[in-house]
Length: 47
Length: 193
Image 1: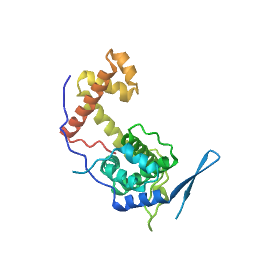
Image 2 (image 1 turned 135 degrees about the horizontal axis):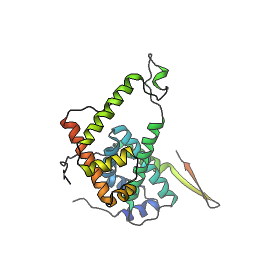
Image 3 (image 1 turned 60 degrees about the vertical axis):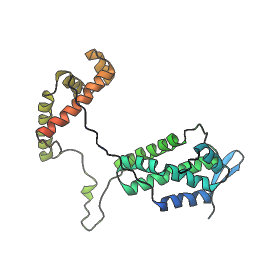
Image 4 (image 1 turned 30 degrees about the horizontal axis):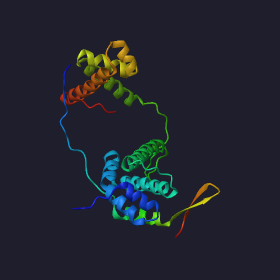
């Protein structure tokens, strides 16, 4: 069987999420509160 | 040298109310997760959206205390991101796209899927060209490609019919596609409708 090996091409680009996205996530996390009542968990946002 | 703090320690700290632990976790894995998403969607804005949705799910799960730490935090987050990427593609496929503007045409988003005469001719030409190219492939590769594409057989059925293992059939299919691409390039053929 004919063997053909593709050439290695660097297609990976290293990037990071924007600082605003990270800031949003941290704010979201701070505002999120979980309340448990009778075995059920409820989400609430405290702004 | 940057101090690498263990994920388990950070998760535990975050679940106990330390919000700074989340920041450290996000910053620690930001590049790997963002690059992974970007490699699949190739769009910076979509990447940001998926990254954000991924961590919203992570935050909710951790805050609810539903996360069971088995030392596989990054693979778990990658899996969430992977599922959201699939959702993104499914949603894009389902939703009709149209450009808003004065020259909006309803037929750009609705219409029957039947090809018109011109497109049918082009399709027939492409099918003929492709069959001729397939004829140039080595016999074993041609056989597997025909069974898979034209007869719609599974690799299990192909392996039973040709008397080779599934892995060999998969390998032959792979080489068939590689060789086909080379033949297309070599002959400068445009196989698009």
